[in-house]
Length: 539
Image 1 (cartoon, rainbow, N blue to C red):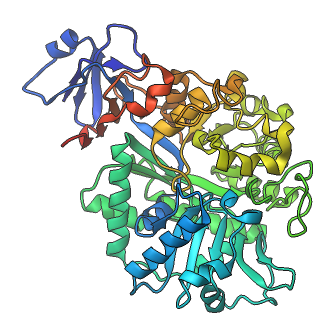
Image 2: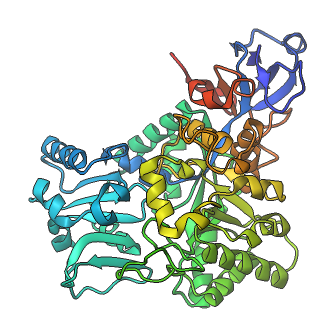
Image 3: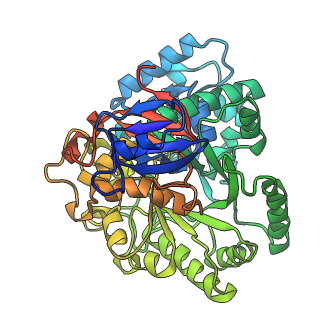
């Protein structure tokens, strides 16, 4: 295969073509140089002047949850209670045989007080359980039938790390936060293997249409290796997947070591596998700012009675450091969900202590999200070699989303949100992703936010905290070589040079030369994984 007439990302002027042999890049050069290397009649792809980039690698997705949500109701984009209720009623009527009515995507700012109530859902789904996840997947809204099915009453205690919201009389309101959401997850009807496979195929096709060639799955719920192996057995090589495994508090060290041995036995078969990788653990240090479950140093603004103070850590710091030390010593990489400044500090402190105790090693532990960080911790990513795994589109300053976030922590703290520019300038390594299905898997949305710090419509004028902007090349690098580095795969993918895997994304336009605010107009022309075309626009 030859790719010609393009602008090759990361290459000097005059490099416009790539030769591919098998699953790897054979050579890069000018059109003339590459044509001279022809050994037969190769397939030729004309990039038509568009950008030829390394395959995009989403460093943080929830492939299992996202795939399952493809058959549920997506409430994303709905900004009124009336529209949400109408959509749910129509979906329930259109699916009379479904045991549960499920969906996702509502945002807190839509509802008075920030949360819907079970009674609102009872009006349109009175006859069977219904459950709808919030846009950030940290809260589930359920109806009375679901409360009854789950056996949740005023006497039901909060699970560790979770919260069942209650009204002034102590009755459950239908809102489950954090680990309390697992009560619903454990009760939903299981999908058949064939349904799981079909939905994963659909999600892989969706990813390919946006130029993604790799994704790093962040658990919750964990995707079984066996399911991905069956897809590979069916000849479905459209996406490279790295699967994480869960790390939770509340275990003794002996129990944790036993769990790690089981994980290692499961993962050992995939060592060196370029399609299904392992080796990383996912844990949560806190929740999210919108529900005041992110752990902050200072209290939230006007903290309500149901969640006073400054949020809480999901781990005791000493317990986390001890569990991390065991995992680190056994060679595991750990990614920590940490959004609030206190949670981020605790994760960084633990990484520093474990590196000191266990000795030198190329760890590349990661912190995911990093929304509200103390300025003192910004240089520690570079100093400690901790990867800053961020999802730029989470910072979308659309009024309905931004106000719900900013009003929880106040203007001063909000004015330092999502500081990827500062982390990058201070030597930290960025790895970008989407957090799909929390937001769209389309990398262009993340690129727009990383480069412009505006909505796709260009608001606010001049950008929100413009000092945190990246160049387009830096943002693409975070989605490609940065993401590859974050999974120890920088010698296989993330750059376009001879010997690398032929995972390539071709845009219809040269996104490095167009104004940054036009990135959403630059569609993916072709996606190539391992030398095979897995998506071609119009094909």
